[in-house]
Length: 378
Image (cartoon, rainbow, N blue to C red):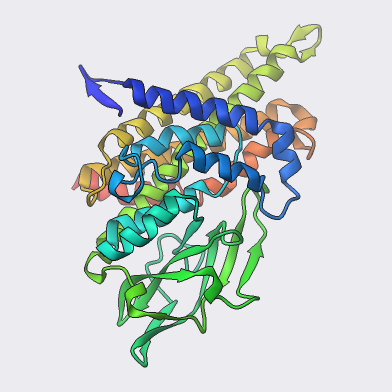
């Protein structure tokens, strides 16, 4: 794992191997030509690649060995998702890992023994958290009520990532005026329950899911005593994974920008020689590296147990910085390509679109800095 020694982070052989293999896999499987080809597909990725990802062990890499995982912790996923972001590779891995994390952190032993090995073996999952577009709104309008000894759900969840391919949903509901998580199988949903939402980032897939009419056994509910803590932890872990993906995308936007600056000539000179373009490019690099530093710091301290104050600070700082880094990198990539940068054919627009989506997912920079202030200043 990542370790801290003499105030410097370093990789052990295992972590370095994960990073190297993830980067090589994503580079080979997701060149920009393939990314563009998948924009018009239903799933947004080649389903055959999911089987290869499962063979690599990525869905269960963070789970304990008792549940079919590699026991490498959530930090092991950071290198993978950063590489995914760098090559705009969008299998339903983050969604699946978050579903597993919800069960790992709040599930009963029976639920863990049932679902975590399935997820490690390739069952695709997702979490349904949002009742509206505001990550800062704590109102839960999706309701579960007891009915004939079971739980009946009513309500719609929005922006449920990868719901179109998910077999397992972990749904946040209001149960007796308290938050609770309920496991729902995809075959329990009606045929028209899942409706795709149009995103500015065309590489991603998100959906509205209507859970009205779904009735589940009480055994489908995660441990209610752990739900409040698990909800905060899940949002922080989700923010951290999206920060990793955004940091990778910022690095890719920088690569695209530098390559253009080195090859485009204007007035007989390479445009990369002009200070007006050099300085913002260096700012992109510094911003991206700052995001990586915060990201991997958070990765060193986040564990399987409830996240403490320092862990919360680290996750929020990483997400805030990564959101800003990608937004700036994507903007400069478009601007520096001139008029061509505003066209659909220019690859720079892939990154500015990704920035608009990822900065909102699990809260934008303002959302996290607003919550950082009392943690750091009180």
